[in-house]
Image (cartoon, rainbow, N blue to C red; front, side):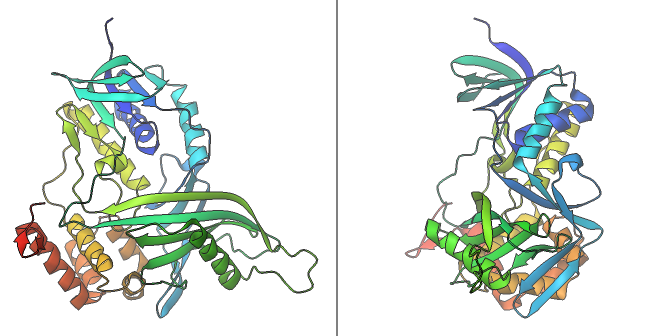
Length: 403
């Protein structure tokens, strides 16, 4: 049987796969035959994406909430920050999936199939994908199928893991015009721990407890952290004599794990197979933010395919990847607590500069101001250690280990 042939196959219909399809069409490639593959339809609100930007997102119509003022609570610094012209945005997974499903139904050249992706393999002048025994071919295959790689000596491997509750308070306690971007007032316990609060209205909000560490916590530890924060900092605890002892209800829960690693990701699996999304290194190593970086990658791929017929290639050196490695080294080896690092950044810089830096859009002069604002001895040690690993490899037992 002859395999069905497409111009592009996108393996994985999550944020990166759906975004790439959207940007391909918007770049004028809607006449190409595109096949989207995924395990099953997405019908659950399985995740929340947050990002900041100037102007409007391609998915502005389904942005759930947006804020231009955010609270930061750190060490010796607590302030409501006006981040304009940036806007901090919250996008619910289910709203994005529904938007994209409606959009896909209007694209006659895009096919969406479900099943188990069994194989992706280069095949001469293109690549092939096997889905439940059926073979599909395309000139280019883009895969968002992420498989964690074993830790490599000389690189850093932290996890950003978090649990969130959407709660409804018995009384108005939230200001829906202000989100809490980072709140480091929680017990750090030798790690980087913070919460953020995204208010929907005066009584409902998503409260997220986040940890940067090599290992996950026990499930009950996330719950304990959330309860403590909600009681202590949102003032939602049982009141003596109140007939309604429950100060809030938990409406929804979410849990997630994001890799924070500077291990090089394989962008190009083979001549005609490219990784996208987290699998293609689009999760920022030092913060875990992914959604807006997926949009940037998708636009570049689509524009390059439109102009040259080839996907883009990454530059050989990215100074922001170097900065990420140094920060990961500082956090991994406790050279400076994460609470102090982020507090220094926001205390000594306008928030717009910090967000621009995290977006990897700053000029060299702005990078200099960022570098001056942190603990220079700690970051210098981290930078030297990263440089040593890159030049000579890690040393174990006095012997160089190839990485």
